[in-house]
Length: 255
Ligand code: 13P
Image (cartoon, rainbow, N blue to C red; front, top):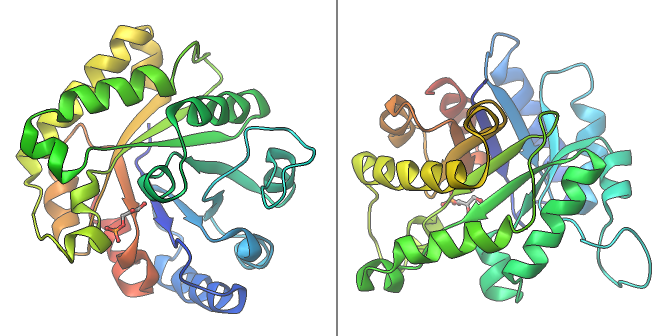
């Protein structure tokens, strides 16, 4: 499977700023990239970014999606809408939504189900807090997030999933307050643990062919070289550094 590098622009750019950044990034990326590159702007910027990436290899993704198909859900966005705008991916269960907006494993499970049912590949985010890491409960947290998030989901041969391991303590906004670095060797151990949990759920061929496990948390143009050497890491989910066209295009080349 091709590696995948995903830009999560979070709530940092207006639609016009998003359009400018994607145009700049498109020029830097060029045509010779073997990896899959996905941009996830905010909902209001999806249309304009979709317009700008026409005739390029860049793929569109959303930062969230509702678990309901349609109806009285003020402020939510449906799968049909993001599909109509050209999204192929949707980030589901980002830690910022889990922590600040009360998103639960149950909601995430429903979102993953509807994404798969409607042909959108979910980018399923998991990760532990600094406290959980220090208390030695990281494995339990990841196990629970995987078990609950993927409950009753049978990944079929025509469906794909991206699992993004983002230790919350390594995400730049959190790291600015409590600085801790993730060593690539440490990340590799966690990747093996996640992989094993997926193998416990689904046939090996499905896990090997249809699931990519990627890393997120302060990935930049420098540390992506080391993380990129780890065979089990199938890509990156990038926040801060994806807001800089030079840095993000360099990251896409470092794996
Ligand atoms: P940073 O790359 O800014 O740490 O953000 C990571 C992230 O949350 C991507 O989803």
